Image 1 (tube, rainbow, N blue to C red):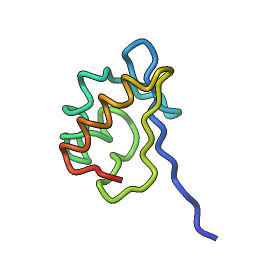
Image 2 (image 1 turned 60 degrees about the vertical axis):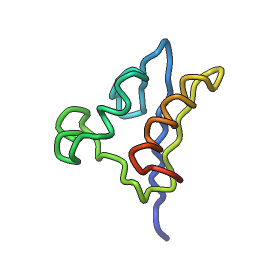
Image 3 (image 1 turned 90 degrees about the vertical axis):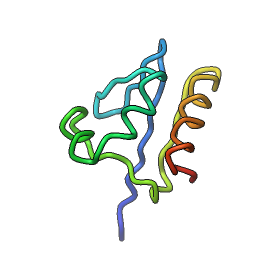
Image 4 (image 1 turned 180 degrees about the vertical axis):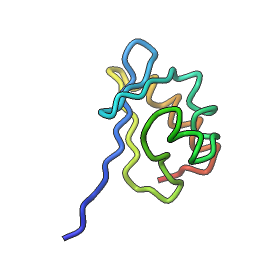
Length: 80
């Protein structure tokens, strides 16, 4: 049985947090997702999501910050 790696990025008070405890604001999403995989992992301590990943989820209470983040990463090729 293969394991599924879920990448949930939850925005609270304009900052993102995933369960591996990395933080960035909605305004920094494009910068973070533009980093090389090595830079991303060095800065946040987790593997950078790949444009082929089907399991990248942005979440916030109203959906507004999550939509902004999603729109920014779509411009970088993340479309799933």
